[in-house]
Length: 232
Image (cartoon, rainbow, N blue to C red; front, side, top):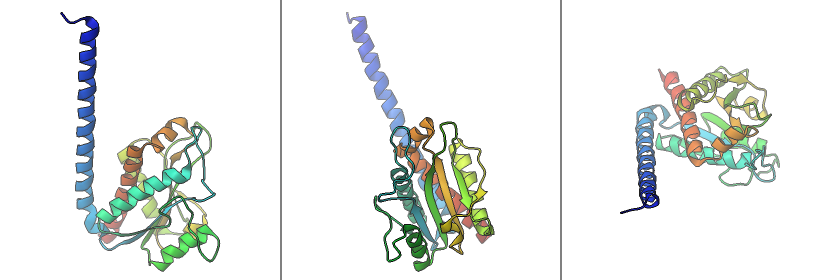
């Protein structure tokens, strides 16, 4: 007759198997839903030129969470996912950096080079991705726009709403911000602060690859929503 320990081991193994199956099914279903959503919104994105700007890079790693998570790495992961979603939707996408190095050019100023790229490729939209840091109590993604740009404000509002709707972990509102990359472009441009690395719980989320993908999809959905509303 099997011992209690033996039976416990069998049940534990079965539970692990069931859990693994559920995780796999959830992942497959999530991927299916994302593909369908991308297909449904692709008409709004077709032929749009979007510059995705992962903030920082090189010697400037940006903010660092209490667990050692670097802003430059988090935003690069999110930006790569965002670029993939946009391309699937039919947009032409340019990343200001595709690795850990900051953009380089004749100016010697990476911010200037980010703006120059957007101007060079004739961007329709510019989205800069960053992570915030203040204290451990602050949390939540927030989108910023140039106060002088009505279209930038509309883009920011659409992205903020989709982040709230899909991720359900922020009540923040879009805000105007006087930032070089925003005021230097005459196209809809936003900075998406994807959360606070200084908050230990949010830091754990932001370094999670699945969450990075979900955040990227929420930003993508906001861009598509903005473009769809603009074309009506």
